[in-house]
Image (cartoon, rainbow, N blue to C red; front, side, top):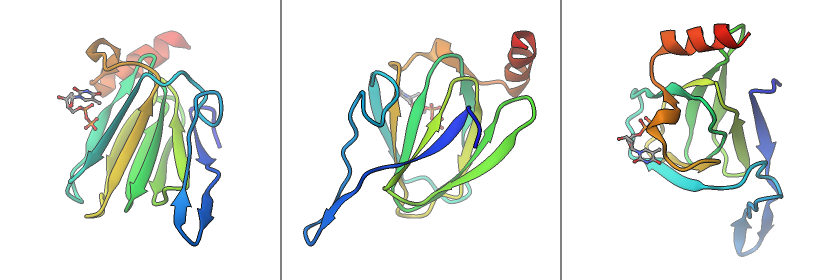
Length: 137
Ligand code: TYD
């Protein structure tokens, strides 16, 4: 596991009624929650993301179905993570190039974010991402 992402196992409150996961600021979420958004209805072979963030941190949860994330720190790591469970969250730090694809038909992704939507926080060019990473080293 690396510092730029980690898989978080949530506590599941399950009984004969079904299952429930509760996520609280100060609990399993390591930042102040500023925004929540969700993504669904994306075809299997679409590639979303293709950006990094200057400051944003996120926890990404595939609450239904599955999809595959590629996470790239711009230096030495490019790793694939499959999300296929509502019991797990993928924490992604700032300055990580991410692409996600292989969406199942029933895929619903919930994203918990540390900042409001700010286009100025996006790095949408991979070359620019690499040059910023190199300058920071
Ligand atoms: P984008 O971040 O490019 O989606 P993805 O990385 O999942 O492919 O966002 C898609 C569109 O939605 C884009 O027009 C910006 C808009 N958007 C908002 O208005 N608010 C948000 O919080 C997000 C994440 C996107």
